[in-house]
Image (cartoon, rainbow, N blue to C red; front, side):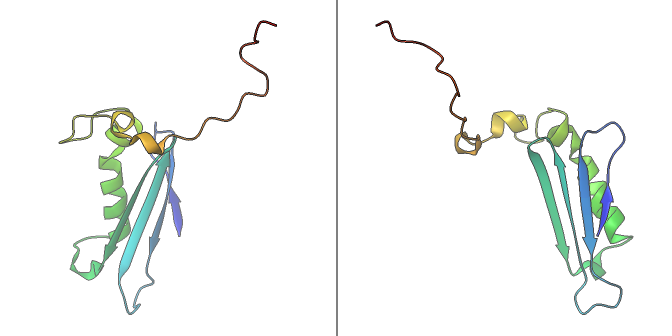
Length: 104
């Protein structure tokens, strides 16, 4: 496993690849910025040209405008916040003090 970041982006990622000569050839990345994340995985990487780790990181980098910079998602024309399902919001914590007091 190895970590990676992108200059000017407040986020971090991890890349994992199979060992050279392993029975299965695979790789994955996970990149998180704020409460958004992108997870990529490829199996049978032997059909891929170039370095698998670098290719996965480059694909992650291509998603940064909509993942981390509030740009519209290509083809959806909504930002990550606009596309977030209603049920994905965290449950608000109860207030430790009442926000309004009844008149007694």
